[in-house]
Image 1 (tube, one colour):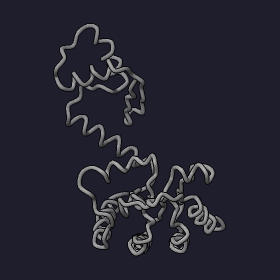
Image 2 (cartoon, helix red, strand yellow):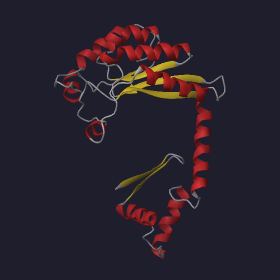
Image 3 (cartoon, helix red, strand yellow):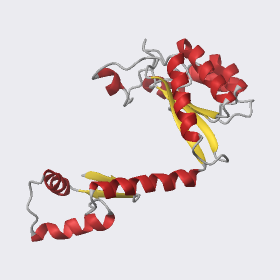
Image 4 (cartoon, one colour):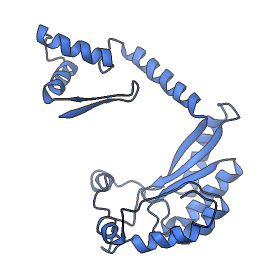
Length: 231
């Protein structure tokens, strides 16, 4: 069984392998449509998985849909990848693929790259209505690696001067050490993963040396729980 997903029409459909084979064959131009396929194709067209639009019409439709979504959110939202590196080796991490195959990406952003990124996003944001909220998510890899502290502080300081607010997705292992920066620049919400109680969590979210991460994460949360930051 397969899921067909169309985020533009917000449709999700459970289909079998025959439907997938049909779609792939149509896409390759290898199948002559017969009467037995017509009902399936018509249903797929009604739901929005198939279209008679040209490439330029599709591109225009996607652009309009993205613009409509942008106008609804009220946010100029950016994701800032501090690094692709991580100090954990979680058993289920999907990003291991990116670090295993192909060319290794830059492990840490440079100050020059930070300046260039801000140059680009401020240019984009200056073209939108002034009343919109300007926000940046710190992301990775793991953004709160201790060796990246200078870069993180630089990103926060520069963004704060430019009127951006911040939130973060972090594994939480160094949250205690980053707590002063988080408080100073009011980074909120702080999204941290705990996979249940210590015995379960430490089997799943493990450090590179094989040890657990539960105690470090809870320590960081404890340091921030009395603040007005959302965790």
